[in-house]
Length: 459
Ligand SMILES: C[S@@+](CC[C@H](N)C(=O)[O-])C[C@H]1O[C@@H](n2cnc3c(N)ncnc32)[C@H](O)[C@@H]1O
Ligand SMILES: [Zn+2]
Ligand SMILES: [Zn+2]
Ligand SMILES: [Zn+2]
Ligand SMILES: [Zn+2]
Ligand SMILES: [Zn+2]
Ligand SMILES: [Zn+2]
Image (cartoon, rainbow, N blue to C red; front, top):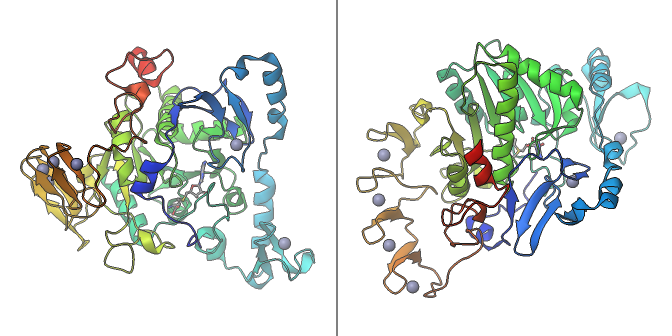
């Protein structure tokens, strides 16, 4: 499962065409089958497109900002109000209970039709269908352990945490006295705590198969890129209730978005969820809700720029079903998994004392990979990608071992295929060409009306 897919490496990410997402309230945007679209901007202009599908083939809605002013276009887009699907959670749960009342050998799940059924009740699932049977109670309550990942890799991208990673994440929450978890795209965390007394959780996920395995008040059919609840009001009430009940015992968002997902809409979602939390817990301070977010290390500049409180920790998140994302001591990638934990909880609360791949940096007071060295010049443990960085005195910073200081370019450059005076322009600011921020946030420019920077200033 998932082996066809190539991870978008840092270099590939740098070569992809530059497009910004304008982080803003999406409620007045055109709709597609996945809820409100996002406003994108590239060198040709600004346009609305799907928040979830990365390929135009999967979702064709594409409306320029100018066309969206046209009443006819607005009228035509209204059809999506009726086309967006909901999930019938109570029906699905009723079915689950009927199936559970049967002996495991009578229980089955058809992968082709994505449904649970009782064997002797239907002949619909013939030999062309992929069927899983028998099903134990344990399998019914832990579907991620046996449900195959959804096929469309450009949309759902499902990779499960290893048991060790689940344990690490839960221990961080414990250290911070957090008992309530909003699991966004993290069904294995949700399942791991489902029978525990010390945590409660609510799963928010786009994979609606979960409705057949979790009670209606434990699962929400959700799009994390536009904070869209497909079942509308009913689930908004549920989410608010969960937030209200968690006010005394700590709430944390634990999210693991599909790889390649954009940072801007995810940060916007965290802010929107924080606003919802504040609307039901009036005395909550102005900060962002606690979050533990699994994401590739090379997204750090974007996250840091948009939300400096969210820090990257050196812990390498391991996955069950992906060789490349396992630790370097196993068969995986040379430098280990590229996925790290980003969090606004104190990084010193991530205790890896039991893990031989990490050491405590006495100066940073944080656990780091054995290969990560503390640089006294930079004042921190500087490695990001799992290799040992070296300090460049000219650039006054630590760089990857694959870099060298080029005197002609007057900066550190990738050693391989270096051509002097060429700059990788994509993924950097359209204006000043620096990485780490987008044009809308460029410190050299006045903020455009409605830009993220402008809105933040006036917030
Ligand atoms: C990379 S996997 C993470 C799974 C996680 N590591 C675990 O073990 O539970 C991404 C998860 O996000 C869900 N997902 C994908 N796109 C989503 C979206 N737009 N909104 C909400 N959930 C989404 C997938 O169904 C999947 O559960
Ligand atoms: Zn769409
Ligand atoms: Zn079937
Ligand atoms: Zn250090
Ligand atoms: Zn250094
Ligand atoms: Zn240098
Ligand atoms: Zn050069």
